[in-house]
Amino acid sequence: MSNEDEQENAKGAARPTDDPTDDPTDDPTDDPTDDPGDDPGDDPLAVAMLALLAGRPPGKTVTPEEVARAFAEARAKPSDPPDLWRRYLQAAREQAMHLAREGRLVILRKGKPADPSHRIKGVIRLALPSCEQS
Image (cartoon, rainbow, N blue to C red):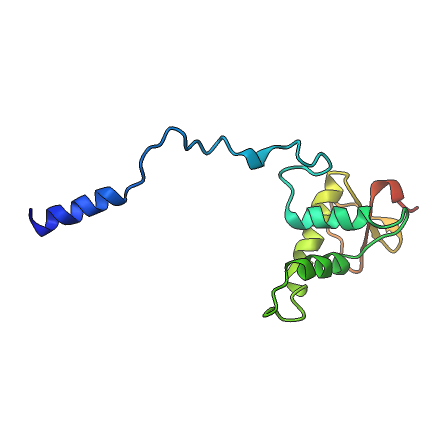
């Protein structure tokens, strides 16, 4: 057998087999009934944001900074910098806008609900819809 034949056989052996039991659509972790409170397509940051709000007393709000800090603290490794939360701040604001457009939370600007379909600049606070302040 030549060197080229051996290389082709080695390549062929490295190819994955077509196993009929290996069905990617049959994933047991994709069960939407596992946590009925969360949309299975939610971003982990959005889930953390809603959980943080749900853990607050009625009528209390959080800032995107608080969400980013809590999220970073939960994921931090000993080697991470102390300001790791800053990496998540913009994502927290974007997720807040997304969740507000879906009606799952309210964005407050100067204590009043802000329209999430428009750009919101400045300091904002987040609340659950039942806690909406006028």
